[in-house]
Length: 338
Image (cartoon, rainbow, N blue to C red; front, side, top):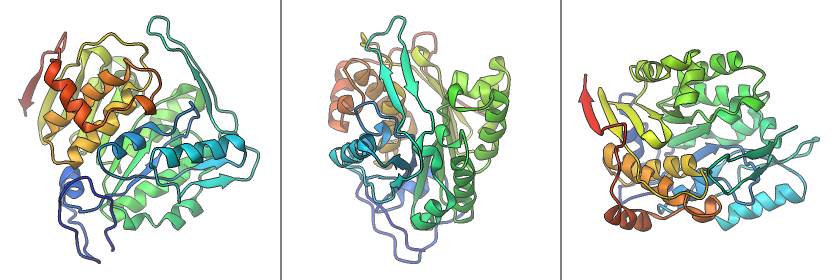
């Protein structure tokens, strides 16, 4: 196997035909690569900016590829141009020729009574199929990041589940952002079934309290379910909004707070957190520090208009962290071993 990549640090390049060790953790397998490709399944919801986690990873000095489908019309071409603008590689993005639409979102820039309107009828990204996966040659990639929106409907659902199986066969770590959007699923029961099926082949799972409640089938059991998942998953992050996050990795429970700011809107916080967290881990930051970097990025983004344009680079995040202190609030920071 040729380990292809785009680098996020100063590691040595693995030799061609080298195979990753099945026993290595997700973070070791990522950090050992000289290059790192992120193959990202992400709904290209048109918000007049491109896909947020990919653009944020690029700001950490790396480069990302996006695998999806967009409509063959003016909006689809706009999305492709935005991917170029933010430096996201688009060679795996296909134009959907059937009757389809780019997802469209209108988001209010305010915190109180915040509302968003999202149109996803015949969404082009959900036409992703197995031929797209085969032509992408995922065995050449070092890491895969998916979002739960890609699991919401066929044929994308089966294609992504197929990808997860292939990734596991090739010892490629997969990170899943649950990203549950109820309006895209036929029912919460079906979402629970598919998410849990996908989770079996994931090395990392990231979601908020509501999303883990969907996986558990019981709102009050979301946190316990996240902890349970960590017994078979390298990293599980349970996000709690203003209360911070609880992460499970290497038999540790890590609780982190947030950076207090005066937000303009909540939109983009999760994308900033995810992209910055992964970017920091790829630069060999310890998990606890990477979590704080993700939290700082989220705090910065919610104080600015837009999402991708508001994403900070690592230098800006570190400067923010020098001036601002993380506030543990109701969730006192701690690390627990078990």
